[in-house]
Every structure is written in C-alpha cells, then in structure tokens.
Image (cartoon, rainbow, N blue to C red):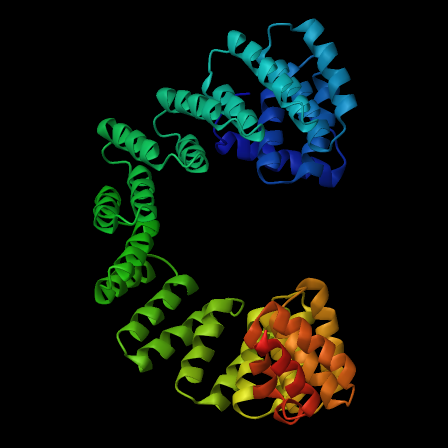
Length: 465
C-alpha cells in the first residue's frame, strides 16, 4: 500500500486520535487519516494502538479495502493465519484485481514455509501491480528462503533496474554472490553498477570489502577512498579503510582514519579499540593502554577491549594489574570463557594454583570442552596433589576426546601416584600403543611414577618391539 508522508495535518489527526482515546469520546476521521495513523503506529512498533485505530476505522468505514488489509496484516503478524486467510478470501471476492490481496496471501504462504506457493502468488501480483519494485524484492526474499541464490540475484537486480538507490537490494545481490562464492562476479557487477552510479558510496564500500576478502588491499583502499569522495561523512568507509591499512602495516594512516570517525560522530568502542591495537603495533604502549581503557569506558561489555588491556599487562609480566583488569571484566560478564582462560593463566603465573584451578573449572562448566581445557585443569590439580580429582576430570574428558595420548598418559601416571599400578600400567600400554614416546609425558609430570620398576618394564617391552 502507498502512504503519504506524515505531515502537519497527519500530526493533527494523530493528536486528535490520542486525545479521543484518553477522553473516551468517539470522533470522526476519514479513511486516509486512519490509514496514516495506523501506518505511523506500525512503523513505531505500537501494535496495540494500531489495532485500536483499525477497529475504530472499520467501524466508521466498513468498506475500506486498505483498512481491511491493515487488519489482515496484523493477523498475519500475530500468526493468526487462518483468520487472515478467511478475511483475504472475502476481500478477493470483492476486489479480485487488488494486488495487495495477492501480496498478503503470499505473506501467509511464506509464514507457513510454503515459499514456492508464495513466489507463484507474488508473480500473479506482478500482473496486477503498477509498482513492481517491492514485489520483485519480496520474490527475491522468498528465493533466499529457498536458498536459490541465483534466482534471488535476478529479482534483486530487477529492483535496482527500477531504483538504483535501493541499497537493500544492492546488499542482497552482494550477499547472494558471496554465498555462492562468486566474488569475481560480485566485483564485476559492482563495477558495472558504478559505471552508471559513480558516486554511490555504498557500492564503493562493498567493492572495497570484496577486494579485502581477496587480499587485494591496495585496490580495497582505492575503493574506500572513492566511497569517502562520494560521502566524506561515511563512517563505515573510514573504518573499513583503517582495517585494510592495518593489514598493510600502515598503522599511522589507520589511526588517522579511525580518528576521523571519532570526530564525525560519538566515539565508538570499536574505533577506540582499533586505535589501541595500532599504537600497540607501533610499540607505543602508553597510548595503546589509553585507548584500550577508553574503549571499555565507552562499552564495558566489549570483551576484546578487556582482553587487550589484560594481555597488555600480561605481556609486560605485570600480572597483578592483569589480574585486576580481568577480575573487573569477569564482574561485568561472568559467562565469558575467554575471561576465565586469562584469569586461570594469570593466577598460574602468580602461583595462585587453587585460583588457577577454579578458572579452568569455570571454563569447562561454561561448556568449553576443548582438549586443552581438560588438560590445563588436570595439570593444576596435579600440582595441588589432587590426584583423584584429576582422574575424575580426565574420565570426563575421555567422553569428548577418546583415544587421546595426552589423556591416557596422564591417567597412567595418576593411577600410579595413588598406587594403582595395574590400572596405571594398562593406561601406559594404551598410550604407548597410540604413540611410542607417550611415556615422556609420564616422565615429565610424574617422575616418581616413571621410576617405578613396573613402569620401566612396560616402556622397555614397547621399545624392544
């Protein structure tokens, strides 16, 4: 449906309508006023108010097709598809040539995942509509749902043939090409598009990103430069250019581009973080930590910024400051696995072994079941002399990493440390069957167990063979 721009008269209608709701007086509005009021509420996400306007509108204008279509749209939005379908059938009997009826029918098919039927219905709407751009876009989206990307491209291109400023369609064309891994075809299309739209900053930016994906960084920088020439306030182009300049190790120029974004709009944590990385690469650690700190001030939930600060102090072997910052990060987001990994590593460096074990335990509790997570916790439990806890930990690890040398060898040493040499010997034999030099793990982690005669006999037997 077409809607007029919300102007002063419409604002008066809206004020009048909301005043009416407060006073419970019923006032008269013409159907166009109702349409604009409903459209305003739907755009604002105020569905309840839109429903009130539809109900009152239909009571005053019961034959209005547009108001009925709004009513149907709400039913579809609320997944009341059968109700919407019945209302559409009645409206279709009255207005069989109304393209909006077919569009809403297609919407119902789409909601039911009947995308082929939705496409057939939208193609019928094309025969009735004078404005096909929106319908082409809807057909393109249905092909996206079906993952028929080549067909989707055709229809999004049709949108651009009608309106070359339809950036949503442009993004979708590039998305389809990328999904099909047709990067060269995407680049060719954008270059063709830019021949007739040379000042389209969005196209230049997309072209630059594609060149970046192909690691053609100098071409990417040139594309971003043209995006900036087309619109010197285009923050996205400066950010993308900065990222590419980093890849080219031109950190000073990258910083300049990121700083431009800070001047154009409110500072973003991303830009502040990238500036920090650049200063770190330039060995200017004071400025690096300054910008990392500003990034977390701007967005305390930005994990990468907290990790950057912590790593800065960790690399400088200032473990207490590193611990202070990672504790602050954990207090903000205690479910971040990367935070707990750093927490464990820092405490290990500080010889706070119990705290390190707690950190590795949290990593596992949060669902990170990588082999190294199990091994790291085991090794600190060994340091603590908690051999049975270490055995229990590795028995859980086996479920995720069966027949793993590092696990089998550690279990061998652990069972020997609790004087269960038979079980320990069986694990050692299994480990050495997987890899002949697995005994070295026992030698390094459990020198006492390694010296046992039973251990040496197993090693000798395997080495002879």
